Length: 403
Image (cartoon, rainbow, N blue to C red; front, side):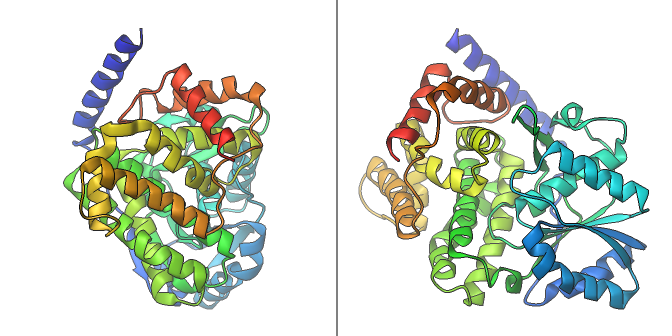
């Protein structure tokens, strides 16, 4: 039975790859450099947007949103501000943003923060153009298919890549299931990469979001299909930069070179996985977010080396090359270099006080986690190793046992 399923997945992904090469995978237009948030009003003016919906979490709503508001006020652009987005944004939050947007006559979105505000704003934008369609009906591939309002994304963490992706991951607060809305029209029009906005990030946020970006780059890189020359190059460049600059940013939040390089790396990794896909790391990580509200970057950081080890020799050639270009290990066999690359990921986690496993996973939840993870990954993700129930269960138990 597994052989039949795996053949179906291969055929599905081959056909999807052929179709995907006919689509326009655009990147957001980037505005970079210290203080670049102040340029947001001119971006909206280009599109004749007179009123903006600002979407943030509570902290960013108090610390960074005022900078944007001051710039909008100066430019004569009105705005509404929704500041109640928390980690793993819910359907309820998306519906509240959409309602406020429509009732107050907004014409564009300014999403400021990590992946959660951007995902919430994307979900709301999808609902703005489909006002009668609930989130659960928009989940999956290409269910939106309408041009969304002008969307400016401003990451305040260097990790999620949401400022360049087609995806918005939304949690059903009743069932704890996560819906991934994926459509090319959800790619933001602009991405503002302002390192000043990441200066005061806690070390824990810097580390976990940085490892989130690394997961995007590595999972995209080891995909067996969907990759293009561009995504391969961007994944390599992102991986090199993260190995070089993440711990610098972690150890010195005022290192603006490291902060800017990490924002750029996260952007590159985001585009790479948007086109090339992610894999079993993300599929399992999303179940942790849904069931336990585990921050997505933290979940990816912990799960990444475990899944790479589980893949084994299938991914050794690609991981060996990553080991070489990052300077992790440049001699020895492919297996030795690949294992050294995985070991360095573990070492980075340890140096940045990221745990090696999770002891909060309940045994009784594992069947549901496996069901959700397999449904998300198969047949959509071009993973190097297809998981069945037994193998996915084994990996989840490793996550528990390594805590």
